[in-house]
Image (tube, rainbow over all chains, first blue to last red; front, top):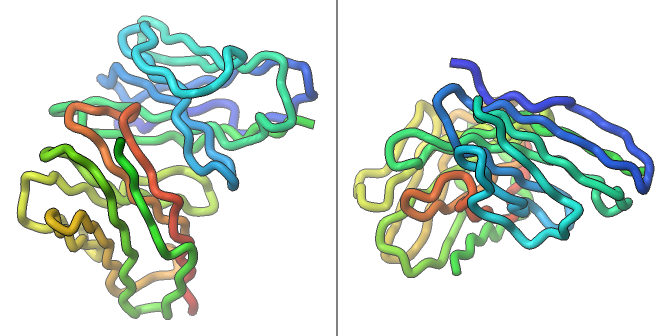
Length: 113
Length: 116
């Protein structure tokens, strides 16, 4: 069974640009959650998509958005990038009995210069 | 609100020795799930072990075992026969029932170094 796949692994962008990150969950998992990880703030929940709908949202500005496709693949978009958006972005795939499985991808390292 | 506390920012252990990482949490839920994740330099968050709160028996996975004390809200991870590949950040996490990954609450992590 393939794991969670995130692309790309690394990105370097300039302030003001926008970026799109992709996540393919484990086959059969319908929930995809996104986290931002920084040394100072740790792991912070961005949002969750389930069956193509945003079901939960963390405390991030509207520049952070996402979507989910019918095959459960999810994309996260950040517009008008700021230096503080530099982070590791992790995607987690959820499913299983009682929805208690949570597996992570390798992350996308975003650097904003 | 749920909180997860890892009071040991860094730890080290000699190869082949045993080490215990501490985690405490606070919740008003009666049923929940607890996890230990490992994040090596490759950055991927790898699930090490999972404990269901309604199960009294402590979970074990090969060299990894937990000491789950529900009343004390404590969930420590014991790594036996430590190997160099165990060097990583370890995160303790709490999940509400039927929570999914969007309901994972993480501690701040413990950086473990295995010394050859």
